[in-house]
View 1: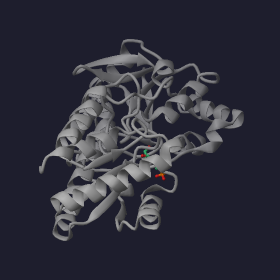
View 2: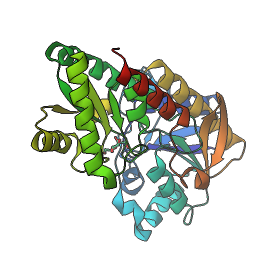
View 3: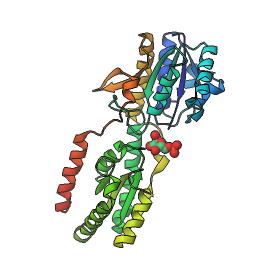
View 4: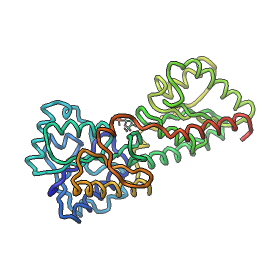
Length: 335
Ligand code: F6P
């Protein structure tokens, strides 16, 4: 390609800037221009891009958020929107498009294919880590570390008061963040899509109440339950209220929310974002199209976009098993 269009779309994730930088540097090496479009796919409708030269990406590797801004763009999902976006790419003489985002953003890329015949590459950037075909997504590691740091602090005050906390974590409809954070923080319990369905709500409430009572009687300890957003109807706040109303158990709900999306990317996210950005440019040069750049067993590879959006990535069963084994031991022993 001679000119690449680049945008970030959907929920921003720490490391997106590192990926932008890597695309620009790699493209520069091969004498390819990079046009940055702002506000996700809206940028293709607005047609007000900027040329990303080396100075534009200087010192951005450590920044959270995305210098290209991000958005979700309903208009892009219409035929008119798609045609308008394709027009912009033609007018701007772009022969390739790289989108850094999640599965919704990749579905957008495939829809655009009906109206534009340039090369398309996706780079998986989302804190949710729910994209099938890549061991990790850009931003997941930082989000997990941010949540761990927050919960470690909650643990201090929870210990001091022997209190119960219900901490709600992001992940949309997947529990990658919740399970990893739960295990890493030695949470007394994890509630996620993988081990709970809302049909068992009453039974689960009773079980939690018994568990909490037993921990408090035998160990005089704090109790931290981490729950995935959208798993319990009404979230952490509703669960805390139900424990109080039904079992007279006092607990404090804490929704970590968007704090998990911000902050300087950690080492892992900076490195994976850099590898993916460079691999995306290399894939374009190799003539690849409609693929997502992925990392599998520490190796960069390409996965068909169609395949990547087909299923949500499942949680590693070893992680769920480890969590259950540890809980079985801690429930019976004072540790
Ligand atoms: O996909 C990233 C994510 O942060 C999800 O974890 C969360 O459900 C969603 O985005 C929140 O979106 P918004 O910032 O638009 O409320």
